[in-house]
Length: 97
Image (cartoon, rainbow, N blue to C red; front, side, top):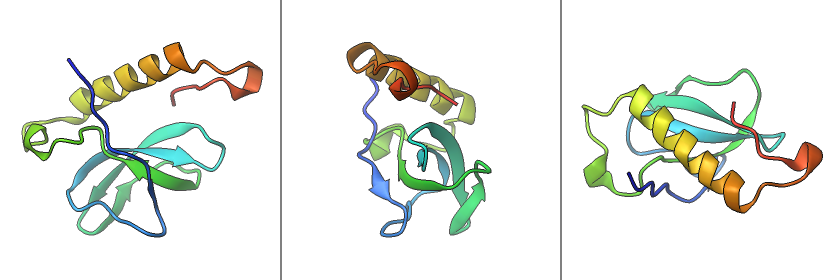
């Protein structure tokens, strides 16, 4: 399965246009997941996040049948690929939440 996430969007400038789960970037630089629905973030990490991105850049691939499990699996694949190419060192190492 090929993963094609969107770019990161600053939280203070943009909101998602579709309801669903998104990968968010915490102030610490780590990532987590948050759900956007009814015009607000309905489920989110306890820590503050500053950016968000969609897990699929192609709106045709995002549908009502897509579940959190499928999106989380896709995000884990993105994170694994990112870590393979840009592993970081020590505390700079990328870690999934």
